[in-house]
Length: 193
Figure 1 (cartoon, rainbow, N blue to C red):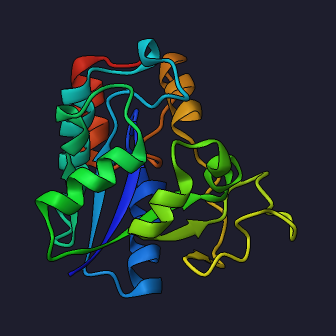
Figure 2: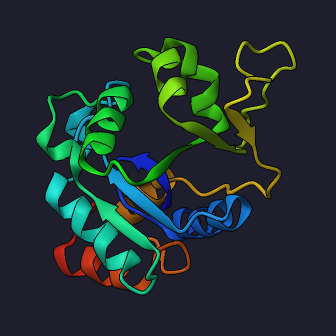
């Protein structure tokens, strides 16, 4: 089964994530797309994150309406900080019948040479890259023409969880940016205030 993996802290998950997941699935005919909730990205401060299980729950709420989209907590049982190569190996061991695709933004591709064991990642999975604002990939970029990396032509998603959290902190409305179930959950618990 062709399964896309979209890793992130999802702090919080928002509509752009869901639109992106659908676009990636259609582009490469993925049968499922899993949102892999990361407890601790080595490139981000953990202190700024909402509790792991609450972020996972919000992803579950957001994906419940979409039969082919699921929350994945594989990284909750792995050493922290979480490294994609370790998570991929764990997923492949747990689900040997699936063909996984790593989905990432162009901004992450630009930092990919500094990731833990990028060549091992490329030996395990194909990488699907979507555009991100301000992240143009130079023609001479080392991974720009790698046979296991595909770059999607798609409209830019200009929303970010950072912006949404800031607006929540200022008590601005973000209802258009969040799935209604997630907006209600955040409002009920007064997260990001």
